[in-house]
Length: 292
Image 1 (cartoon, rainbow, N blue to C red):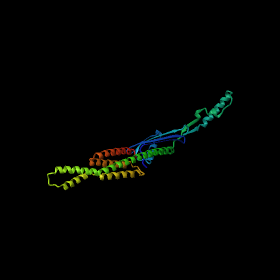
Image 2: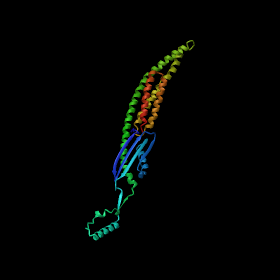
Image 3: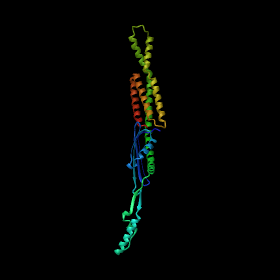
Image 4: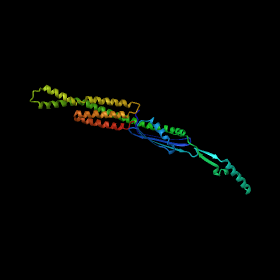
């Protein structure tokens, strides 16, 4: 599966009274580089997040943003000071008797005394927090990986189309190559014959030497190797593993063979084709810079 190094995934859920948001985004990078933003109280999540994402991707600069908002009262325990409540109740009844007031003492009247209640926040269990975050992280990561995979398929199709263009160009060069060798041999033979006109060297010897030198303009070996590299490129695209570095190496080989063809052929038509091929190779190189 070809994957792009560019991706984004976002998920948000309310779990155990906590509103949890996770965002993941990445761009291309030579290696795996991780950074994250989490609430200060949950700093211990950083290593867990990093380890988790390393199981999902191997290359790319990854940024993760996690927010955890605890709903009011979700993480609290209320303690009641029964002795104080009893004292308030007795005092109110005494006041009612002394001032001859109606005895309408009720729970609502007692609850107005706030110091009867003590609200304490419970210690948060790190494992519980992580399990909640991981649930949301799983969803965000699925979207993140899906986006990288979809973009990877687009990059793959673009590269395959450009390989076809390069193969067509190689075919043109192969058709032109014999004529290049023949034309070079004829030109060289003519020049050698003029230079050696007053010598005892016969025409056959001159023709043989011209043929030997003209073979240096043949590019058969280079076109065969270039076709082999193209076949390798296609095979690598079928692998179920990160292939960006392998493809990058092959593109360098594409360039090497193409440059050699251009320098050996010494032909205007081939030079034009080589320029077109190098343009396609450069576009492929740009695309695979974003392949994991």
